[in-house]
Length: 219
Image 1 (tube, rainbow, N blue to C red):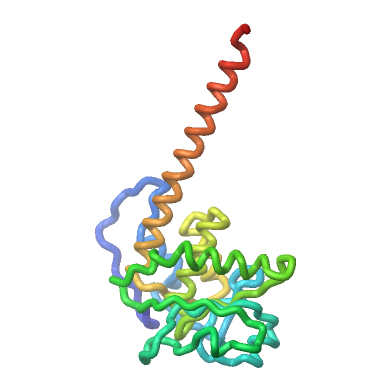
Image 2 (cartoon, rainbow, N blue to C red):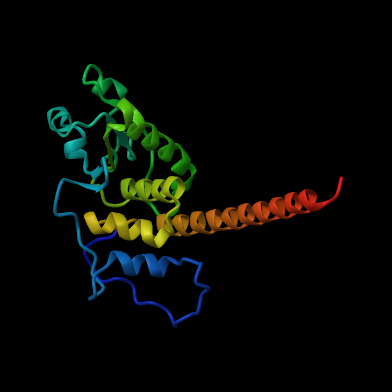
């Protein structure tokens, strides 16, 4: 978790391809013009239509969640330690709120990318709930590192946003600061999705060429 402190000084400038995203680029989107990161000023924010990112305080407040109309909750910090949030499906029993937990640590070496697809699936199903009227509250302890990373991955996986656009989209609505390990994993996801898009385009082009060739051949 990044504190409200100056961003790291970048190394000597290195030219990278336009389609390659770096941790340095993502950090630049998260910090202000003076290189400082800001801590969240609100308990939660709607960062994308019907997707809320926030802290554990609201995540454990059933009345507040119901008032918001939240139908699903994703706890990206499930666990018993001080740095986790000790909730589960039983905690929300009878509230009408569907729960999903991810036992993630806010450490650069933690592989949160193992849960990107799982988190994206849950968010996608939550939004589709009740004829696409569902609302999902995604939280960790502070709503600053783990939970925004999961939402950013969702935007990349399901809305095909570039990592820079996805990060900027969430940052526009809430002060966030995923650790550098999580940012690196988002960069890797961006590279993976870009390669898949290229492969898809090549296969489509090949198919159309074969189809056209077959179409014009005399029978």
